[in-house]
Length: 299
Length: 314
Image 1 (cartoon, each protein chain N blue to C red):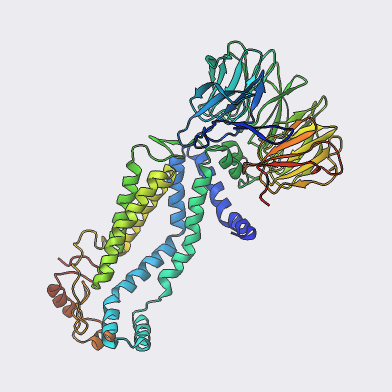
Image 2 (cartoon, each protein chain N blue to C red):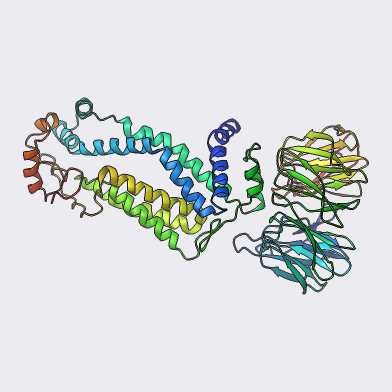
């Protein structure tokens, strides 16, 4: 990273977070575990509007997936037409395609800063402490008298991996639950297969990383995942967590299987322009194993 | 751990001799006494460290003392005792055969080198305390508590113990009583070991400044911005204070005024290790495993006859 960008990054993102984290450690009676928990909670609260916007946009986007699938089936390889109809569909349902991406992009630097500040604050080596000294605010006496921090928390040395491997299990487990809740049923067998793989691989990957990383970071992941689960539940419910994922159907080009949780489209064109009536939806639910549009069972 | 012949730059030995064996990182400068080199190791992964006593001539291991945690500082050697601090919060006093005489437990890591006088062993700890101990028994004489952690090695001069703290203060403490004589405040902490003369103390700060302070009062005589943090311990040659900043810039400063003498030398390699001078040559070890030899004296061309190990690839 060029020196100027690093400088701006440190000034705007890293240093405010790092100093705040160390001050939190001060007010939590020198308990870095509690400080990390409160720190994660505060940062997630500050980002709540963005997170909710993202979740709602994602939910809306997923709800029109069946209709988009129908568009693709109807117009085949006519990309231009598909693009036009898709935009029309977005407009009809008030979906902003940037609604998902923009909040994620804005949050991204915050996540990196949060991660970096925890790692820096955990400075356990002479090099780490030297690096930390260059990021402390000279106006705040407490941060200077506080470092180095006491990294002990329950059975953990927060600068080292969890020796009992409880945190890797918690990180993997909480991430799996969150992934399951986030993933909406998908009729596309390829996509469904990919979703299932992601649901398994990501938690496994993070659990494995937790085996190597400082447990303070793992603690942050667990708390962050739990908050994510709570927010996801508030917006979409349990998602596919409590339901069996639909078996991938072998779709035929001319008569594709409808996405789970959607009415069996009477005619693709009508589906694209007219929302399904409540009665129609109920009938469709019955035909589709009583699954609702959001992936939850209707019974 | 390497030994080089200062006359021709040839490597004499390395420890362990087998290149595939490692003893961990070495943070502290080696201490040489009575034909023995003492060096501490830092194994962060295993959270262990050992003090190795090696034959200075051959590099053969005499003994190894396993401390309960990584070692950052250097060993301090008196006539019959070797003292070394460890990240397991303890100071160990060892016999010349490596057996333990006594140990003293502090409340946090000991990353500094103890200072030895006839009356006391002075020890700093990251638990914010400066301790004065009985040399024979390790019994506590007094302790002085600073607001911040004390990572720097204490220096004893004119009846005062001089230590730098992370709390941005540099302290002079009465060696006999442990009472604070004065405190000098800076913009960042102090980690470097100070250099004291009869009336002045020179110390590099993590705020990128080199300071000269009145030893009696702590009043600032001069300060010079050296461009980066100073962790390396300065040395004095011919009335010049030689200081290396982390960015690898070595400066020669007039002890009385702080004015820079001649051109600074940019090594372009990060320097945290203490500087060493021997027979007119200044030795600077960089963080990326290079050792530089420069003219220590006040000459026009300080690079004349300079060497680097291993040599630069051409």
